[in-house]
Structures are given as structure tokens and as C-alpha cells.
Image (cartoon, rainbow, N blue to C red; front, side, top):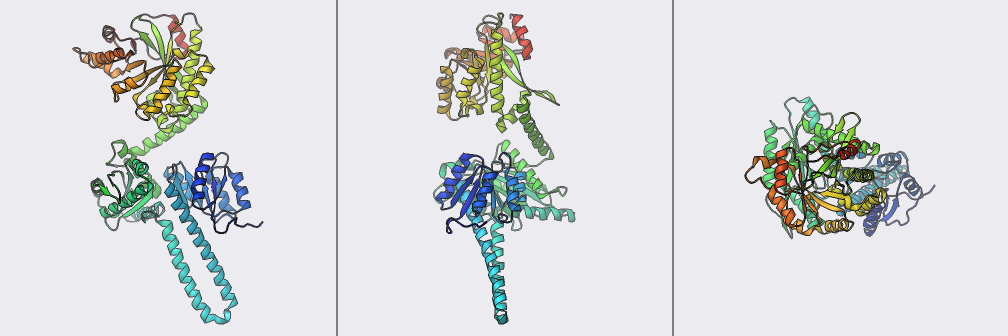
Length: 611
């Protein structure tokens, strides 16, 4: 089988990604730069494309069905004709383990999604230049061998030329090695070289008992805001300025590396104790707090720093960097523009969170969730007016898990959308069943909490319509509880969605009112039907007998704006009487009932309790 280039002057790039949008965006970017771009959705298409024409470079996604990116790369490296083609992984997986695995399977570079245009172009250009240089070396070697064979009679002259060729090849190889180990934008060591130096330091600490070192992981705070608002060229200029200022903060023997994006790593050598590393971190924070005067702008930029003491018990240098990264994220959680020293307990927390995420994914597949229902009482009639649907997780080994423990992980990982949709579907189905019983009040409602992330789904309204159509529930009986975080961003878009829900006669409740920004302007703009007073304010009524805290004001706000007020967390008869005296409309809490299982709700309704 013969292979030839379609255009000998255009480099051929093969993109392998099962997401058509990714293929389209990358193809468009690279085609504009003059590259010949071909696309493949899976391994079979990629294999056929390589048999037709050998590419100069492969851009490969990791998360693909049937055969993932690691296996695709391994297969190409095993085939003689494609073994030398450079493979750049492009993936949303940003964990150091995934990146190390990518390099282990033969990848030459790793770009994290969402990618930056200039970064992709620079890395593609570098790898193509590296490949061209390698081919040039091979060509030089082949020519050299041919000359030796053909001109043995000019031995002295041939030896002279051979030495020249060897020197040229060594120089080229050194250049290639330098390019492969350094960041193209800042000129700093890259992640590969940094890991190698970490490994050297770790090995030295195992051999020399008095040798100590530390690893610092730095991430720029709000860099994306500057990059997106002022442009990538300004962002690149800022990264260069940051790298220069960081270098000025460090001793010559320290190693500063750009690990990717706006992340930097620092290896501090020959330290006496952890206080020296902390001192460096504090000095860096102080220096970076000063303004950066770029060519056209003045900007401010801080960093969050994770510090990991170089424990010789680590098996791999990647683990040192991983734990410094974990400490950096803790610094961000604590308010950013600060440092945090790694504690082994942090790794345990991250591991537990990962285990929780994996268990949650399986729980969604296996439908391990349950919906409990807590009654909502009308304070005018003293009777049940509705129920709030509350999700619980029936873990196969850990038993019943409260949403407090798993909802934050679900929110962070995006799994909350599937859970939210399932709860809404289940609650609507149950309401339909209960309403078929003669003992059920005709105006019984069901309240469901919705995550802010669910509103960002492009088909959110279609999902609501489908659930209503499937369950045949009356939309007027459905009440959606929304926290202020939903409306803090994308106000116009969210308002359109809320108006669409309102048009369907679905009621909207602002949940946890008083605990967030509590801006009255939101209440004027958005079509809420009710305010839900957080239980913390209800509890304070007893602590503040004279004016009962903010509860009267909240009830007054709701009444003045034509909304109803719902108090949650009512636990005592005294609280109930106080709320009645304030003319609060509805209440829920342990005084009336704890959340009850689905199978017991109908019995509760039939018992017709009265308060």
C-alpha cells in the first residue's frame, strides 16, 4: 500500500473526537491556519483515514465510546507506519493522573478542554515542527550512510563531513529536547521537565536524610475573566509578565515551571523547614498583588498557592504535585489570594468525594434514590395544603444518605440535573396518584426544589412540558422552589424561563429567602408567587421575643407584593402561634411531621390532621 500527501506543502492533521461540535470547531480553526484537516468520529474511521493517507499529526479525544483515546493511541503506536506520528490529547479530563496516563500511552502533549485558540495553534505548530525536525534528522542519517558507502575512497574527507553532520545532528537533537521540555509561550520548563526535577529531588531525599524540599502549585485567580474580556493576546502577555515576576521572587536554584494554562509549579530546593516555603509563598502573594502594566492595559492578578512538603515516603513525583494541587484548591475555597499547606486529610477528603461521585453515577443508573414528602400546612385552615418532595439516597452499603451529604457533590459534577429531573417526575406521578383518592384535597400541591444548573439546560422548558404530559398532572398544582443563586447570573435569560413557567400556571417560590442577597429588586423583576422564610429566622423568633427578628418584615414584604409567605423549620407550638399572629400563610416543620416515606403519605392524608 502506498501513501502520498494530497498537498506536499500543507500539513495534514487528523482529528479524532466523537463530538461533532468539537470536530467542527477544531477543523475550522486549523483549516484557517492553512492545514489540511480530516475528521474521524471513532477508531474505525480513524483507522480508515490513516490507511488512505498518513497524517502529520493526530489530535485525539480521550472520552469516546467503544474504544477510548488511550487505546486508540496505543494501537497507532503499535502499527509501524503510524508509530512516529505525534499524538496530542485534547480532553476535558484535567486530573494529573489522566495527563500522566496520556503521556504513558504515547501522547506528546495534552490540551485541556475548554481549550484556548492560541494554545492549540502553538502546540500544533510545535509538534509539527518537531516532527519535521525528526524527519530531517532521519533524512540526514540516511544521506550520511549513503555518502559513506559511495565515497569510501575519500575516507579522510568523508570523516570530516561525517563529523560536521554529527555535530549538526547533536545540535538539532538538543534543540528538539529543549523545545520538548519548555513552554513555548513563557520559555519556562514545562510539566514534563518539572516532573523530572521533582523525581530527582524525591530520589535525593530518599538517599540523603538531611535533604528537604517543597512543591508549590500556583493557580491564577480570575485569569479567565481577563482572558475573555481583554482577549487572549493580552492574556498571553499577562502570563509572560507573571512568569517574569515569579522568577524575580525565587532563588536561582529554584525551579519555576508553567504547568499549563494559568498554572505554575515551583520546586524549592535545600530547605531547612516548612517555614521557608511559607515565606516564599507570602512573598509571591505580596509581589503579585502589585499592578501589572501591560502594553495597553493595567491589570491586577492574584494567585492561590498550595504548598506540599517534600515527604520522602511518596512513591511518585506526580503524587507530590497532586497533593500541592489539592492544597491550592483548598486555598481557593478559603477565599483565594492566599496559600494553604497540604494535610494528608485533604487527600482523604478528595478521595471520598471521588468515591461519592462514582457511587452517585451508579446510583442514577440503578435508581437508588427515594423521595420523602414533608407536609405543608395552611395556617388559615390548619389543614394540609401540599407536600415538599425531598430526595434521599438509599445507598446499598451505607444506608439512607441525607441530601446534605451528596447534593454538593452532585452539583459540582453536574449529576444534579439527572437527579433533579427524576425527583420532579416522581413527585408529579405521586401527586397524580394521590389526587385520584377521594380523601385528598382537590387543591393539594407538590413543591420541588430545582438546582440552578438545571435552568442552564437548553431544553429545560421542554423537559418540564414532557414531565407534565407524561404524568398528566395539573401544572397549577406544581410549585417550583428556586434559590437566589438561580437568578444571580444571566438575569434576562432566567427571567424568560420563569415567565414561560408562569405562563404554564406553574407557581414559583423563592427558597431560603433572607439567607442570600435578598435583593428586593429581584422580587419586582421576577414572577414569584411565594417567599419561603428560612428556618434559621423562624428559630430566632424565640430568641428575640420583643420583635421576633426579621420574620414580620419578610411576611410583610410578601404580603405587600401579592405573594404568600411560607415558614419552614417550625418545631414548637409557640413558633406556630407566633406565625399565626403574624398572618403567615403556610408553614412546615417537625411540629407537623418529619419527611415521610411515599407509601405512608396517603395514610397521612386520610387521617386528616388538624392544627
